Length: 332
Image (cartoon, rainbow, N blue to C red; front, side):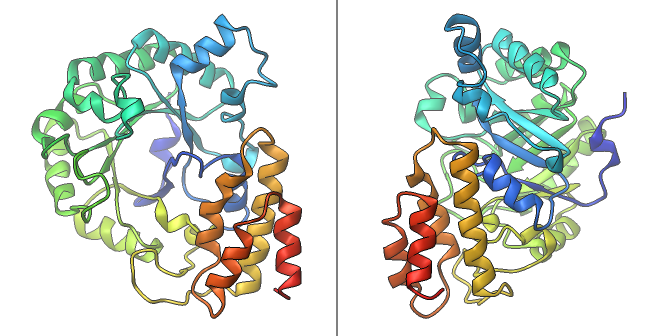
């Protein structure tokens, strides 16, 4: 059966899965302002899903992991990202994701967080390619959903010849490469020259797999340029979304990597979007700590005179109504 991946334009531009960022409230905000070609959820623990639903018998309505897998019709096509080092848990979660109506499932093999790695997941998968292959196979056999993978170019050093080849042998629909090693985290610039090597390996080993580049993409114009120069099928934007839910519509914001650019979204529109995000966050994810929104406050409230002072006040907000009140008091 033909999957949504085969129907995407070339190049295509997708939303990065980001913990405590790409939740349903933020995705709704982006969907109204310029949709990416593919949405991604935050990553969800496959083991956690099994434990809360089958062991604890927690109803889906109060299950926080199930709330992380909520989505709206406006977000299609949407991929659910899961992680585990156990094939049976991946199979369980993949079946669940299919039942929930997602368009695809993505396996996280790139997260560098120690708590994730201690489970043999995320970036730790790079050190166990046979386990990674078993994980992909389990997902593919569990449902008819297309399976994709998000990973890095290596662990302590670049190892695309071995690592990427091992993934390609399993014929996932797509592979997203964060163009840094696990050791590099995000402390050095992403090495986009490595995408050329990745494309050569892909073309030799399994030309049917789509390659998506990720790392230091500043806006849609930059994404188009990188796709053209380095030959990937698609580009994933992550930090470029911060403070700029219009990024997939082509708008530029204050650039996140030190380039002075006032952007092309009026301040009033940006602040209104921030309030809308806070209101959606409270409504859709009431169990989550409102402090999670501080990273969004920092991103939206920047690049104008008085931004630092206003940002400091907004950081004290404990609710969407607090946020709106502070903005009104400051006549913004």
